[in-house]
Length: 425
Image 1: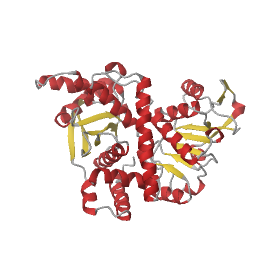
Image 2 (image 1 turned 120 degrees about the vertical axis):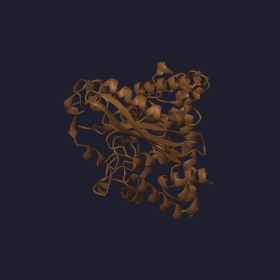
Image 3 (image 1 turned 120 degrees about the horizontal axis):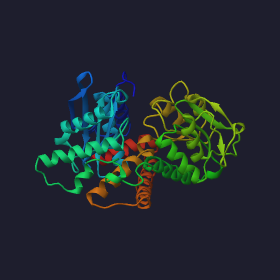
Image 4 (image 1 turned 60 degrees about the vertical axis):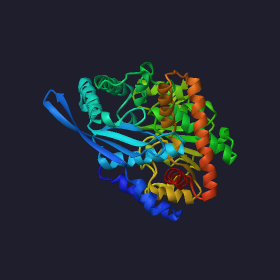
């Protein structure tokens, strides 16, 4: 997020505006918007140049529906307003997905690329020492986020269990449920890596059914080919969607024939070999430069496709390019890829936009399944995980679509009103 943007104030203003429109109790709403607690900590790390102090945060927004839940990010632009906003979104996301969680979020102001692995481990464990008292299986359950991963979750879990042992608490396997996004061999979840992308495709399928469209005739462009973008592309392709454009941070590739679709596993293989997507034109197991061309990320967003999936950065669709967007359906797999003004403009124009708060909630749904697995001391197979994910996502979509018809507004406003009513009423 932009360091100079007070994303928390923007989010509050947007929700208060929606609350006024739908006559929500203003006092209750203002009280709800403020986080229950924000903890600021200092974490000393021994480096080659001596002890360096890093600042970290944990925002616990609301726990009316259950323990706080949310990721921990390591980034130089982390600040208090960012974690407050992210924890608020998590509260809403969990309510929409009908999960027994509230919202939380954490972060440390650091560029992790500047640290050695041992320094990164010390930082991760130092952060857990500082927030130990406010987290736990039924208190607050952290997870990976920007620049954190399964290995970091393992370090944090090990530190938490070590501290619990020192404090003479009863050690049992349920303590592993304090963290999600752990390595599979360390009490993690099979299918967790695919959960966000898989959940997004389930939502897409429900939208297409509601609109009565034939998916095999639809073209799709996906901006972003990281974990979320890749798995969204893979599952959508497996279901018969024609993916005609893909991008990563270096650029985009476009199929020249609308009848053609990218071979997603082959594109990934090609990207790994070349380091970038540019130059990868793959179809039917054969890579051929004649079958496509290189375009920019901006050009990808403005393609005349049926479905657009921004799965990379925030605010990529904004006041500068909203008039050039031609897609009829947009699935927000990134967090906040469309600015509020652009969202309103496109919605009024008739574009069906599935907001991030629903579209990418497969991630937190996967975290819920991992938490449940650890609490019950079980080990779910990937097939079981996908079945549970499908049930959660379909129910969330069904609830919101019915609410959309009731409120007679777009899915974003519906999402906010539905979630807030569920929590404050």
